Amino acid sequence: MSAIILDGKTLSKEIEAQLAERVKKLKEKLPGRTPTLATILVGDDPASMTYVKMKGNACQRVGLQSQKVELSGTATTEQLLKKIEELNDLPDVAGILLQHPVPKQINERLCFDAISLQKDVDGVTTQGFGRLAMGEKAYGSATPQGILTLLKHYQIPLAGMRAVVVGRSPILGKPMAMMLMNANATVTVCHSKTQNLPDIVRQGDLVVGAVGKPKFIQASWIKDGAVVVDAGYHPPGVGDIDLEGVTERCSAYTPVPGGVGPMTIVTLISQTVEAAEQWK
Image (cartoon, rainbow, N blue to C red; front, top):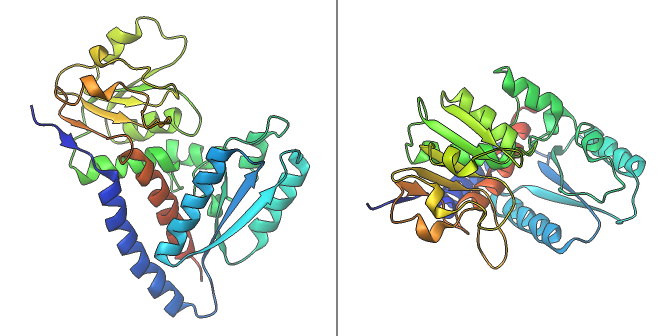
């Protein structure tokens, strides 16, 4: 079986080219306005610093302004809330990204939910999640939304498909399951308390690895012909799924790196551009 490689790196470049044109038109339409993505980094976690830098580079490539906000690792919830409130009030800030995770002393959910719904381009607020669950307009969580864009591009038919999502985090596993249900897939969500996990994964026509543990999902758990989406990344370049034993048997898969990661970033940028396009 020759599997389709779900190439997020190439697709993200195509989308970026389209976004650059949209940003150019937006600036021509609204002279003097500078569409901006504000990124908030609390502390000095090396991985988080790298991710914020990558997002800033993506902004630059499409013509967006990137405003970096850095807070000390000892910052309080109140200090972070104040900064978010300031960004909510800045007219040229089209989107706000609070880099996850934040230090343990901060109430992360409270801070996520302080982001204006119109600027929640990373899809992290409770209100945004609820609206999407009810079929209303909101920005989707960047990683699952990027996965859906990738699957749609490669014409993976989700309707009627049995999907198994391994992981239930509020910004990945849960919204992924909800989005797949909205696309008419039949979805099973697995987690740390799931019994007979290998047997359940073997039922999946589509398997999404979103558990955050390197090579946790074994190749033997995945049936022949499945579509395999690995949303994890762990140095030195492995995901949540043992892809080595799967690529010769599955019908399609996301490589690690180069699959889901680039789609996450381009989705964040795309939703920022869309937010700016709502300006009057």
